[in-house]
Amino acid sequence: MTFIKPELLIIVVLLYIIGMVIKAAPKIPSWAIPLILTIIGIVLGVLYVCAVLDGGFTGHYIVSGVVQGILAAGLAVYGNQFYKQLFRASPADDDAESSESDTGKNIE
Image (cartoon, rainbow, N blue to C red; front, side):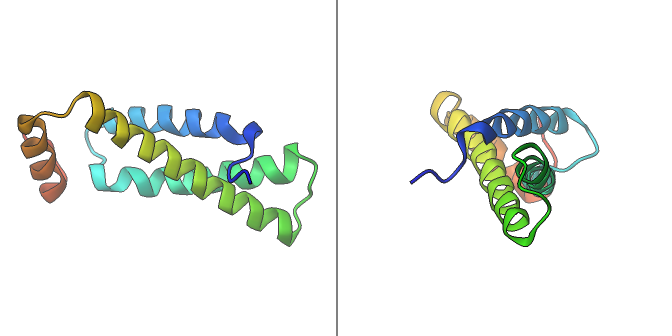
């Protein structure tokens, strides 16, 4: 069983890139990034499933697009966190990351 349709994996890549751009913005707190990506993912998922896959804007296809958007955003955020934990993890990074998540700001 496929949870994310293969043709929608481009949305995961797009959301990952959008997340990196948002992370570089100084006025957006880190805790808001997953929420923003989820909203963008839902919009892109619904548009893609309903418009590009010729499903039409019916209830079934809208729900499918919402689910696909949420899964795509989750995979983009998970992929980013997995990369950070696997390749950039050190005790100093853990302290800085926990302080950042507590205040919403980077304290470097």
